[in-house]
Amino acid sequence: VAERYHTAVIGAGAAGLTVAVGLAKFGKRVALIERRHVGGDCTNVGCVPSKTLVHLADHLQMYGLSPAEVLARVRDKRDSLREEETTWVKDIENLSFIEGEARLIVKNRLKLTLSTGETHELEAKNLVLATGSRPVTLAIDGLPEARTLTNESLFELSKLPEHLAIIGAGIIGSEMAFAFRKLGSHVTLIDVAPRVLGTLEPEVSELMQEALCERHIDLKLGAKALRYDETTGTLQLEQGGQDLTLEGVDKVLLALGRKPNIEGLGLERLGLSYDKRGIPTSRAHQTNIAGVYALGDLDPISAFTHSANAQGRRVVRRLALPWLPLLSPEPSYPSAIFTDPEVATVGPTLAKLKERYHPELLKTLRVDLKETDKGYTEGLTRGFVLIHAMRLSGRVLSATIVAPKASEMISLLTLVVNKRLSLYTLSGLVYPYPVLSEGIKKAADGFLFETLGKLAQELGGYLRYRFAPKPKKRP
Ligand SMILES: Cc1cc2nc3c(=O)[nH]c(=O)nc-3n(C[C@H](O)[C@H](O)[C@H](O)COP(=O)(O)OP(=O)(O)OC[C@H]3O[C@@H](n4cnc5c(N)ncnc54)[C@H](O)[C@@H]3O)c2cc1C
Image (cartoon, rainbow, N blue to C red; front, side, top):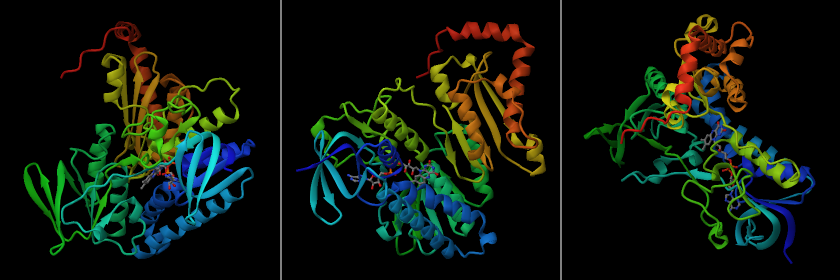
């Protein structure tokens, strides 16, 4: 007879752990099934090893470690956390942690292939899919497996690559470019796109390209990897119709994006809707099948540990406290990129905002952080605060910060965006002196002077464009 649970959660990453532990703490009987390691990608092959590496690479002299010792320290820290999390999860009341792979038989019934090889079945009233994602890969002609890295093998390196070619100048590629360069590798960052961090504001790409070049990281944009020659150790690229040869490449890191882990779960049997971006869900993260939920990297909206955790809390609330009022729409999640300097954003880019609002309704405020007193005392040469707000009302729609600790500065703006607060509020806030967040206040003050200085014009402009149709996009 199959065991019965209130909820079965597949995947013990950030999303699955949040749901399973939360429900268990509310007294629900939960089964949490994991086929690899507790902590999922974040603990094992994502945030934790990558941010340990970024930190150690930044403080090489302080720790007095060789590059090989840094790589070993990254693994040690990852392993300790994994062990700690595994012990913790096994000890939680109401939670059965099951090591194995799960697939669906019918809606409320799962088949488990345990790590011991045995099979087992369980039943649950609710099913939570939190199976995460994996790296997109690319076959490069002639490139042996032993020279190919993804985030799943990168942190297993015991020796620093001499010349690391990174394909993909997105978040992971850019973060790792800085870290490996600081450790001493020669790094070439390659992308087919014309700019790095191409999904962010163009101002970010421009600044980041300067920062990468200053570190002597070679940038090959608008370029494609064609083939690798093992005898000469060369990587052949094509850039703008010309062939380029990168010499002495000993490792190639593929950082091309992520794809959701959907295959093999048996979802087709349920008629559960999904596409190649993931599983679309309702506000409460329910799929098109009642009682089946999906979240974290499986959800096209979420790509971070903090968003997986936030979504997990919403699922816990729905399943454990169904009598609470309907959940509000999903908030804007911030993102943080641990390059040098860091980048943090919340809300849509200007290009996306223009799809939603008439461009004349939008105000953009930019303050270069070297113009703040803290920027001056720290000798900052680059970095900025960029805010897009609604004309007249000053409601903050989105923001980007590029600064040494941008990740620590973005939460104020995340609150402002999600609570629909305005630049008037930010201007009235008192900031400690001196801090780089003064850039936020300066941006808000700039808006105030401009708006209140010509109030009649701003009011007229607002009323004219608030209800006017948006200009047609050129084809
Ligand atoms: C290099 C890198 C750096 C990153 N850095 C950051 C960062 O600094 N900050 C940040 O917020 N985010 C970061 N991320 C993103 C973050 O790691 C993910 O968004 C987060 O891990 C998603 O959590 P999840 O629970 O949805 O999925 P996962 O963490 O991937 O967990 C899914 C789990 O499900 C298990 N599983 C899958 N299928 C089955 C099955 N059939 N049966 C049983 N178990 C199964 C998997 O083994 C896995 O453990 C980074 C990612 C990478 C790759």
